Amino acid sequence: MTIEWRISKVPVDYETAVSVMEDRVAAIRAGEKDELIWLLEHPPLYTAGTSAKADDLLNPQFPVYETGRGGQYTYHGPGQRVAYVMLDLKKRQQAPDIKQYICNLEQWIINSLQEFDIKGERREGRVGIWVDRGVPFADSKVAAVGVRVRHWVTYHGISINVNPDLSHFSGIVPCGISDAGVTSMRELGINSGMDALDRVLEEKASEIF
Image (tube, rainbow, N blue to C red; front, side, top):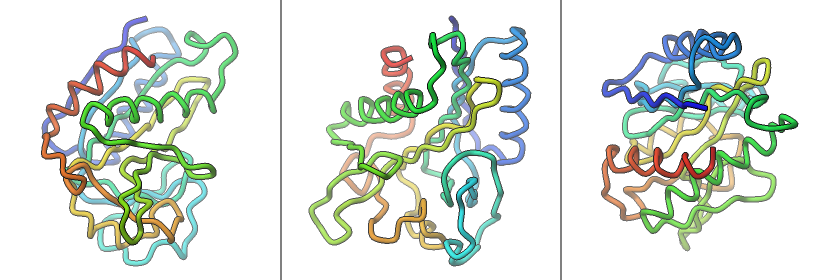
């Protein structure tokens, strides 16, 4: 199975990205196009997943989009690598398993961060990838996962904080979790840019998918 890789060098409007994903999901299901992993950034915005609670939107300083992905509120913006993953689970798994797919996404992030000497970890009951910073709000989220599946074709995906403005997360309770922080690769002392992460993501994806 062939996965097309696409990297957008300028921020992509959220509604445009969703429209592109929905069209591609339909084409993958129809067998008309290859699967796709799309790396991009968005302008500053918040998205509300299917479990979002109104009280977790503290200060809507940026546009807010309701989306069909799982999860609660999250922030997207410059300096954050978003990877939208469109795969056909029916072709990839004998018995399509969304939990296993999410586990694969998490492992992809963990393996990629390891290349930058960042120890990303899962947390029981919490989606996404976390690091222990050894300071107040020591448990900090460095990457988020939110997926949607239509007819066993996936879309939406992951986001990794490379060097976003972390103050922008203050407008929401990220993923509904108020007793933990948010961090970035830069805050963890890694100054590698987006291009370096993109190369690692593509390499590590071939091991996972």
